[in-house]
Image 1 (cartoon, helix red, strand yellow):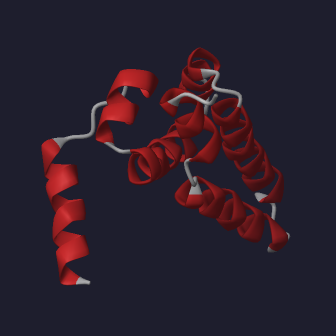
Image 2: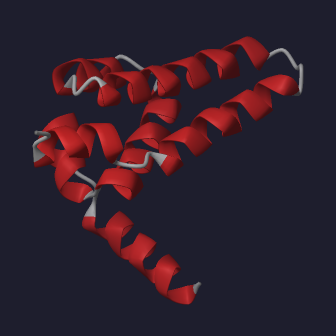
Length: 111
């Protein structure tokens, strides 16, 4: 029998994290001098998905903490959208500012 925790790690759609991988791959396809960097960022985001699916919370948090600042922030935000604020705080160790959360809520209402 699969526990709720196991279902969370295996079945939670990571649509925003996957979209981030695709975004970085798209940037890399432009073929400019930063293509290698964008591919590395995509690889890092993809590795985060793999670690998440393996229920490796500690490995995921360590991996994210070692990333470059900008893609790390993008990835934490993507996990916030996919898994929620509690997941990001409790498992990744990041606290989103209330002003950022309010801004996201305002954007969602305006859509």
